[in-house]
Length: 479
Ligand SMILES: Cc1cc2nc3c(=O)[nH]c(=O)nc-3n(C[C@H](O)[C@H](O)[C@H](O)COP(=O)(O)OP(=O)(O)OC[C@H]3O[C@@H](n4cnc5c(N)ncnc54)[C@H](O)[C@@H]3O)c2cc1C
Image (tube, rainbow, N blue to C red):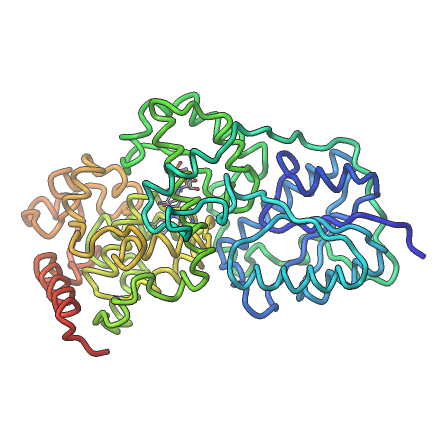
């Protein structure tokens, strides 16, 4: 008989502090088996995209070290969790199994099946909240259902949040040996998460993954940026935001830790409200598990989106001829990240200027963003496209030139990510097509050769999008 153990199954909760599942497992007094399963086979849960896999590799490396520093050991397996977890539990004689909850529909279903099967085999299963300020079911609208509008949701949530009693990282963990008869564990490198041949991420900035990196980012924000956060967060030419999104997605820091450290006044209030949008996205995903593929507002099912593979590819590649849109896409390709305002402008361009279905953009971001997150990505795409909960109205169509002049007034963002335009004066950097020939020549820009002509005229695109909306409103569309 194997010695009794407690099993901690890590998922998107890759940290050791403020980790209720790990704390409870350590408190059980049993030796611990800490496990991460790369599961790309179970039906339902969406496998991580390319940039996310790269970022996950860094997150796991950091967790491996943080656990080892406390006497623990992280083991890796690859395959369907529904088979592997019970096999390990059986071989290890795991009396108790601990994990942090997930909120996607397929993940909830998988976890519920596993919980039932494990309990049936006589084991205790304990699950905890590690990812949210409050569980989605704890915050209810007056009618008792899920909220559809952000402001009352955030008010209700803030009333619910008690000052967080944060959990310190457990020390002196006792690692159980890998059990005989369990599937052979792998080295992290064998999960092959990092891209190779070609290593397209080799020039991505160091993500400074893990808890220590997340803390540095948070305190950098609180020490240097918070006072100006409400205005600077929109500026593409400043580093005015926290860059915590991937840390939060992988659970390297809990939102409760952020909430506990951030003063709720001045810029802190606005920053916490952004964390509120993340909570709202999870609230929506929990209530609408189909959020990443079905219009929240079903009226948009009849929206006359166009199928235009060439335009979609030009957008993906950053070849639309609109410098701000193209800089945004280049930021994504070269860093795995995109500034929030750039995400809004790029998404608006795809769905409104090009009239391409938001799901195409969502899919591409899923693959290209290191912080790709089922809840935030889907909710944000639907928000921009006008079909989401509390969405920006469809008729609000970003003008990429005016947005550039407002949020990147000297063109620093465009110059950084589109160096082929760097020589243009600020007056033309967001609209090179309007520059006199001599100015273009001086800057070394040859439209149609070194930089594309706009793939669509802004005024035409705006009229076309509004006409599509009017047709939808009149019920005069067919797909
Ligand atoms: C089309 C589109 C797609 C997006 N896809 C994702 C995604 O896949 N993953 C993701 O984490 N965010 C996504 N966002 C939201 C937002 O752009 C990023 O969270 C933000 O840019 C991350 O930068 P930051 O950490 O410096 O943000 P900060 O301004 O420092 O904000 C702090 C935290 O609040 C949360 N947050 C901020 N804005 C939003 C928002 N609008 N919705 C939900 N949470 C928010 C993030 O967790 C962020 O780390 C998307 C936005 C758009 C418009």
